[in-house]
Amino acid sequence: MLVSRFTSTRDCAALAGHRSLFSLNQHDYGHDLDLNLDLLLDHGHVQHVAILPITNVKSISLLKRQITMPARKHVKPAGTEPGDTTPVATGRGKRGTNRRKPALVIGLPNEIFAEVAKYLSPDDLLRLSRTSKHSRDILMSKTSKHIWVASRKTLNVPDCPPDLSEPQYADLIFGLGKGCSFCPNRRTQKEAFFHLRVRMCKGCQKTHFIQTSELKKSLPSSLPSDVSEVLDLLPDVTLYVGIFLEHFVLKPQADAVLQKMQALPPNSEEREAFVKERRDRADIVSKLNKQVYEWERTMSTEKRDAKLRVLRERELNIYTKLTALGYGDEDIDHTLDKKGWNWIGIFRKNRPLTEKEWEAIEPKLIETIRLRRDVLAPQFLEHRRGVREMEIRGRYMWFLFMSPKAKELVLPREDDLLELQVVKELIEENECRIRMTDERWQIVEKYLCEVYSQPSEEKGAKDGTGGISGRENRMRENARIGLNI
Image 1 (cartoon, one colour):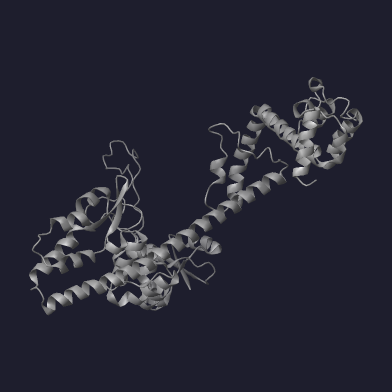
Image 2 (image 1 turned 45 degrees about the horizontal axis):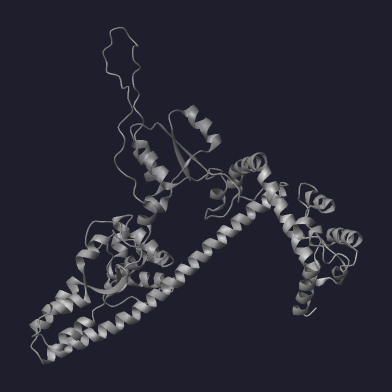
């Protein structure tokens, strides 16, 4: 059934035809329908209640507001009577200060919440735990460990080390913490020092790191040799000092180990057990570090490849749509664009192209193409002319060294070839847009055979005529022999 509040019988009858009603769910409220209707009728601002069949169900939250919110007060208009001093409300009412709680999360039973949370990634779980006290109490409790484990396995993250909890492990890997582990600075390096279990800013690196060589020099010579051995087992990082790489350890860790070693009697069972424990821990940390770094490298590669796939697909879709509109390769060539032209920024967005976005960017792309045609036409023409000339030069060199016909001809040099009228016409045809195909080159080759058919012996010594001299003919023959022609 549905219930709605109206101020008059006529309004009730009129609005009933529109069926803009609120849902009253007996299960959600824990009362029968009559009790809820009485609650509405007992409200001081409700005169009529309409009950209609369910046709357009709204959300429960709207019904709660409809029940709990009193009717708006009727404010007396200003200046209704001369001399009336009744205060009149002229400004907006006081804004509500109660923030709406995330009813979807709060209303879920813990079992269902835990089952849904398993399908989130660890970083999503961290974000969810920071949305409300309710979700934090669930996700940060020890009983929620199975949620974090299931979430971690969805991304094939290596197992959590024994010295960290699952939330700490996720925070260290995915970098959603509050920044530096030693100060309030939120600007830290991208990767955490995982084997040290910390994130650090540049300033704290200078303060809390110490070179292993300096640490050993500062040790008293009277200390047993196993102290140096234990310090060697401390996790360290490699950082640049100038142009050299140096090993650093955390001062707090080094001081704690040094104090522990000094407190234990030499050659005692406790001391040997402590050294063994540090050695075993170093082995575990080293093995786990390798797994984590390999996983991070794999995830980084997959993420980069996914971004490239999206980027290439977006570019292809845009080029396909522009081609369908009749634009050619030169219209979408941005190599000669001026600074400030809106083109690259539209293409290099890491999201798929939607129809709505295409409607927004299409006018911008067409405007840039118009600018290219108006402003860059001479540059594009010169570029096309250079491409056609390179095609002519390449085919001419092949003809000189590979064609048997060239042996009996006195041919012009490359630069002189480009000055021939037949070659110029082929290059400049359709504003240099037609490529030099085999059929078009046959025109040049036929012209050369007809015009330069005089035997090379008769003009071999005339180097100043523009033709290839006898010496160059011999060089060409030697080149043929070298190419096994």
